[in-house]
Length: 112
Length: 116
Image (tube, rainbow over all chains, first blue to last red; front, side, top):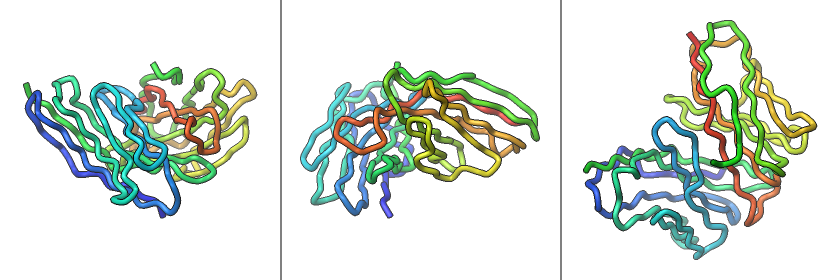
């Protein structure tokens, strides 16, 4: 079945460092891909999405490109801030019932 | 603010009890989803309703049930509660149950349930 694999955390970086959180997927069709973020003590928020191959989703300085050839949707940011500390979830949707298939989440810790 | 409203935000109850979690979807959204997030199991899909009817079922226990009312709000009922049911329960909504480029799922802030 469909699945999403994320790099294990926690990922610890210094402020202003470059961020990459890897996400790869397995799907039989053409899924939509998402990154959600969960800040401490809060709910899940949609960060960005891409619905077809080569689409680039972007928001708040974060970017991810839908790469069908490598079945990947890696999250990147050029210069992270302490306020980016959160858990990041990669997810895909496919099928007529629109269930989201989730990665395990990657905790990001940014140190000043 | 996602537009999805969940109540209560926090709830503490004893084992064996029953609780009801409530969710109001974003205005115009017909689909409602319930998810459970726990430390050991991660994020798990429980159930989906579309315009009042059950559309998909995930890892929902028999002790749990849900419904979506004519005004589209939804309730998740958890009964015979056990310590292991302590978790963050999310409600989410989307405009449609059919995947499309514009159909994104939006999450509420969750209801924290602690069973003691």
